[in-house]
Amino acid sequence: QSALTQPASVSGSPGQSITISCTGTSSDVGGYNFVSWYLQHPGKAPKLMIYDVTKRPSGVSDRFSGSKSGNTASLTVSGLQSEDEGDYYCSSYTSSSTLVFGGGTKLTVL
Amino acid sequence: QVQLQESGPGLVKPSETLSLTCSVSDNSINIGHYWGWIRQPPGKGLEWIGSIYHGGSTDYNPSLKSRVTISVDTSQNEISLNLTSVTAADTAVYFCARRRGGWYQGVYYYYYLDVWGKGTTVTVSS
Image (cartoon, each protein chain N blue to C red):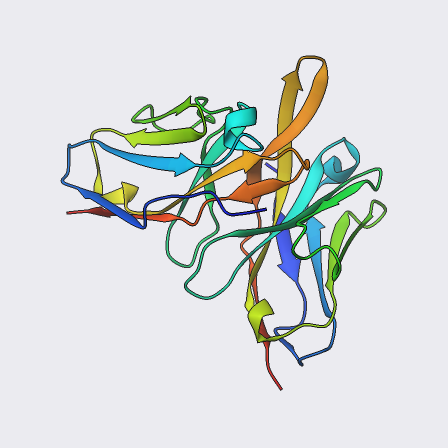
């Protein structure tokens, strides 16, 4: 299975919005509404931010939102805050019943 | 909230077998979740290794399948990972995580990781 494709980096100023894309194939992202997003701070374990493409776990700010069109899923972070900085990973269920991750996107809050 | 804790040798010699254990803090290992292993080489992204259901069914990353075995000990609330014939490329932080999901068209799919351990660093070197 090939990793999902994410941009290596994105940046934005406090208060702005950014969007991170995640492109796969019809065997993963495009075939199922089972995309999730994770935020990882340096030296820490990843934290679930979005699942089912659009759902937020309890405790995750509504500034985080997800969407999907075809083989590409997207994560939008609005009202950027310094604590949003970190590495974001998308993940999808695959036709082999496994999970596959994206390569990761480093978000910098300027 | 359930907690996960990875443990095992921090240093493994090339060609040997890497063995790690993930301890689950409560009895939820018997409730019906999948439990997965993920790794992250230094400075790189996350890689799915595989997962196991409490009943024993497994799924593995095709690129690692020939070298990986994941098992569960429900009496000890533990999940284990064995990776054989390791090389320097297997040097990574290894995480365990709970894999959850939901119903879709009459089938239950497991597709997100809601609880993670803190990870354990394994270095492959002679």
